[in-house]
Image 1 (cartoon, rainbow, N blue to C red):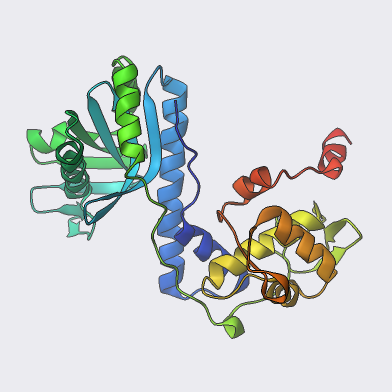
Image 2 (cartoon, protein in one colour; image 1 turned 120 degrees about the vertical axis):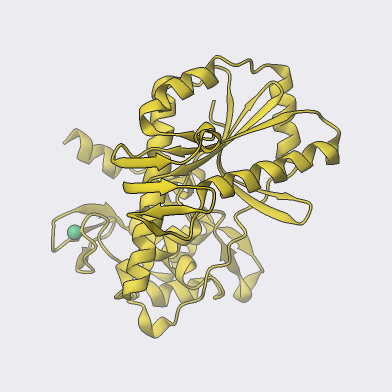
Amino acid sequence: MFLNTRTKSKQLIQYEALARRSTLTREQGRRLKFLQSGYQGEAAYDRLFDEAGHGNLLIYRDLWLKIENATLQIDALVITDDLLTVNEIKNYSGIYSCDNEGWYINGRQISENPLAQVSRTAGKLMRMQYLQSVPFKVEKKAVFVNPNLHLTINSKDNALNIVERSLLRPYFKDLKSMNAGPQASELSNLIEAFIIEDPMELPEHKPEHIKSGNCCYQCGSFKLEHGKFIAVCKQCGYHETNERIVLRSIIDFTALFPNSRLNKNNIHHFVGKIQHERSITKLLNKYCIQLGNGKSTYYRLSSLDFETILKDGGYKSRYEKEIVMG
Ligand SMILES: [Zn+2]
């Protein structure tokens, strides 16, 4: 059972908003591709795990923990009766090799070292049992989900901690066959006490570099024709409710200007005054956490993930149902 949903990281959401609303530098473009590829790899891992079945396993995905002074991020953590299994997920494709010194693509060393990374995480998890006097073991694997990876591993020891795509199904089956009963639940409760929110601080972008307005969900064009409830994209003809469109702009604003106040005036200015101030306030009240009072009211989004926000805000639209039926 997956204990939480996996969403794109704040960083990826910010880069995607930046790509929609500015011209990326080469370095930003590379970073965006890297983050997107990582997320696709994690999504592939989840899909394959779903297909193999979870049995009684308790699985956390994209978890942030603070253990003593250390902050760690775990792509997937599988909890069984007295064992925590850490999976570091990689979407590498191409010709790679690794030895005890590092990892190489076409013979050139890269800055990442998945085995060192997963070992560090496993070591920090072990610290929890001294803090809580609950005994458990920790297993670690670097998991490679891309079928187009040709990996040469130098030693048997390193091979033990690596799962390649061709062995992923049997690996999940092995995990599924482990016992996960009350002891696993206890372990998951223990972990819960160490969970923190993604602590990554996003940089603030300069408004003059960012295109304001609303854009099409399907093709990204800013040429929309807004009706009373829906807008139609002049470029591709895509229909979407104003509610969803403005909500996506609110997310972009929050991602690109994390230090600026999310309030009625700023959003009204950002979306280009196509909406009445009153309907902006209605949207902010519906989907955001309200802070402050009266004229100084401002808001906070509890997540930057569009689907999560829609769900938590109870988004309902007769309109989309009509489109599906029509
Ligand atoms: Zn479009």
